[in-house]
Image (cartoon, rainbow, N blue to C red; front, side, top):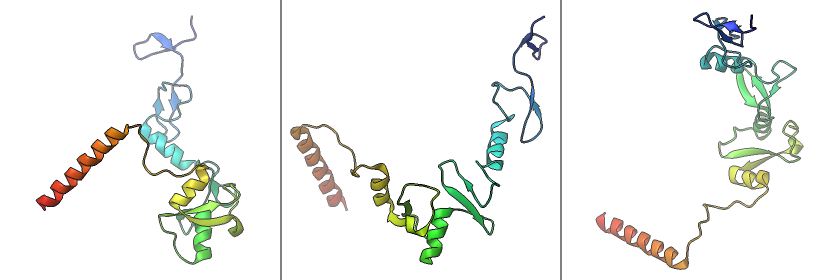
Length: 160
């Protein structure tokens, strides 16, 4: 007799036993050994129920390594919350809070700095920010495209 399990038709061709969904409690047949949920929606619920190390002290570390906290039922990234309290105003969506020493969980005011998103990108990516992209064109092709765009603009202005 083989160690295989019975499938729906009574054949012994299954190697993974039925499991109980960690979200809804239903029995299901997993396609992989590591599968914990019966459906995608249950899988999303499981991941929402168990943030990385929630419950160990004040706040938790999210998937990107930043400490998160809940204040009056609202979830904040701790470094943004601390900077907002320090400045006495809400941060703009275009503003990023930079960790000067690069340690994402070091949220002392002396280690935090408010930067525009573009400036923050330059600093964190360690490379100069280049607007657009480079394509290799001959000077003749570059001039042709430039002349074509000038014609298009002039036509558009005439039609107004």
